[in-house]
Amino acid sequence: MTKLDYVYASATELLTYFRSDPDKILDYLEAIYDRIRKVEAKVRSYITLRSREEVEREAENVVKRLKQGEDLALAGIAVAVKDNISTRGIRTTCASRMLENYVPPYDATAVKLLKESGAVIIGKTNMDEFAMGSTTETSAFFPTRNPWDLERVPGGSSGGSAAALAAGEASLALGSDTGGSVRCPAAFTATVGLKPTYGLVSRFGLIAYASSLDQIGPMARTIADVALLLSVIAVHDPKDSTSIPRNGKTDYYFKLEELMSSRPRLRIAVVKELWRGLEEDVERVLHRILDRICGEHTCDEVSIPITRYALPAYYIIAMAEASSNLARYDGLRYGLHVDVEGRSWIEVFTEVRSRGFGFEVKKRIALGAFILSAGYQEQYYIRALRVRRLLKNEFDRVFKRFDLVALPSMPIKPPRLGEAITDPIKLYTMDIDTVIANLIGSPAISVPAGLAATLPVGIQFMGPPLSEEKLLYAGALVEELRRGAALKPPI
Image (cartoon, rainbow, N blue to C red; front, side, top):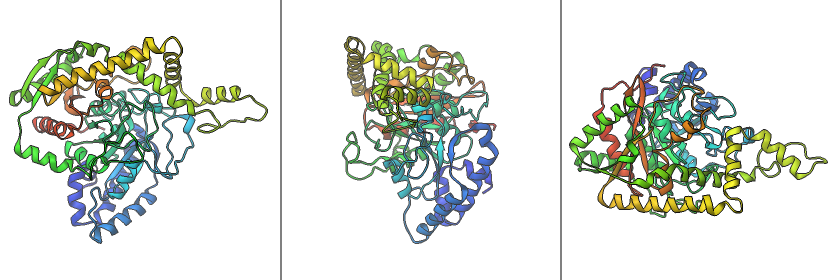
């Protein structure tokens, strides 16, 4: 393999190669670091990049384990981890000055499972501060750029993970998804992002934004690689009270192969309210791929009028939970520390939060505190929870008749840097088709559908809880239909 072959090969291809010759893992990691040296200054995917020497030492141990006959699901594969997922001994900042120097003393459960499977953590990827944003521009350190067009955003909040994959700086990645934060950057970078069923992947070690919505999600360049990564991290965890009890692991890669072999016919719902307001060229790409899917599977249009309230309900709930979760950063127990001698608690608290949080985070905390304040909780928060329940009921009815719902991932092409961040309406309405899955706890996946004016467009599938196998199957069908399309960025 050439160095470029190494960095853009799928994880499944690499694993076959490594099992026959474990020493090739070191050649592969050398190619990854060479690629990072060439493109990272342009893309800025990583906040913290581990030293090549340290990573190679870990890899040598993986090589040894393979030679001793261990069956390692991700032997030697380079994984990028979003910087709100705890990594023992590796700085974890949430892209915030508040946690700029925080080094966790433990691994998140998902990271622990990666290490046990032989994966190698390359570094921690850039993100919107505390996962609040859809462009990876609210990072306290620097914006990440889209490898498809360096003047555009990669989406967010897991933009660093998606950009690292698209630019060939990692083979697999972990993101987190609160309202589309895995699926948005996947759509904008022509990668695959899966938001699992709430509770399928442990949230232990994920630094919270909105606890009832947050979920760690696998990201990769192919459906098979996402299935492989999900198989490793989807395990019941007693440390997470929301973790779904189950026995052992599910081999999603094997299940995907079974479905691709048997080719069952899917029943797909198209919710007409969720296909409005698309950019014209984005709509053309999506309808072209959807028409081909519907030529082989059963598709019917349905109407769910209450979806118009999903976005405001989501932001009310998310901001309320953020206000509560981020209250812990008071300068005494957590986060940025300042001089406290001779000062009142209010003075210290005010300075820490003024200096430690960026504008977007402050805005969401303030709105969340207002939403939860006396006299307004019933008017806003309780009503939003009722909308959430009604949405769940409506989609439960749809999922009794259909296997999946097909919808856009993003209604627009990737905005230019600075374009959405200065327009709150544009910034928030980008999530209009992704927030529903988080509100109702369902799994959803974004898959590359093609290119509009040389920029990636993603199609999304959403299913009932624990329908990841069918989502991966639908994604693989899309992948199969657009085979041959150039989905490697020009960088």
